[in-house]
Image 1 (tube, rainbow, N blue to C red):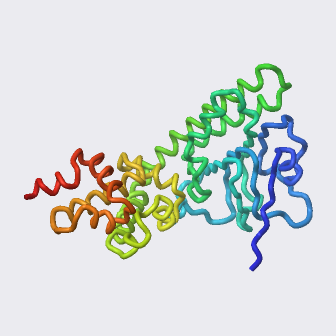
Image 2: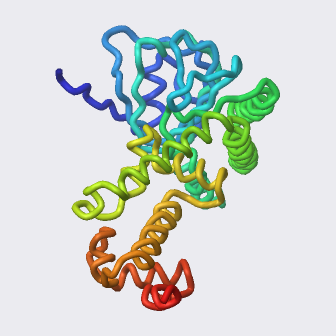
Length: 304
């Protein structure tokens, strides 16, 4: 089967053309309603890479959406955040039947503002599409109100106040999205703790398998792939549930294994380091001391 070619959108104007929309009122920011999108005739690209930030608030999907491996359970809006360079794949079930808002911001619009750096600190721009934000009725009302305020300013004549006002409104929207994602991590306790249980099981299986000696320590990417999650989303979820990110969990498991081998075997520290996937014994000693405030030798001596 041939791979679907990527269609690159370098400007908001190019997206408006593809979507059958009028020319954007501003070259670096655009606010459109999904129900106004009328793609021009001919074959439409199925995989798009936008060179700008995209924030979508969607409703009334004709297809079935899932949150991770769970069907989503809110009847209201769903939000998706895409950073420049991410691939958006459009399926047959998601073509122009839904309503809602699409906010597009070119990075140049944020230039010389605090948000230019801050926007890159929001982890949810690195989440996969299936890790979307599912809004309650009240949350959707809050987000839609902010988008409508941005649209009102976007459609007004441009003056020296236009950019700072929109930047301030966008900053508020992103902060609310961060709050609502934290709520989502907390309220979806059953599915999230199921992910945590699966994470622990995958980690345990890796440490007792032959992969540890051959491949080295499991990476954050490996763990995320096993759970069908993006690495950033997995770390955010674990951080909320346990206070530690994915890498810290892997290291804790590693230290537990090292403690067990130091206290129950006669293997040297170097042999233990190699069995735990380290290329250099010093790396294990450094991490062990950082985590326990004792060297591997001192820890072993405490059992004698």
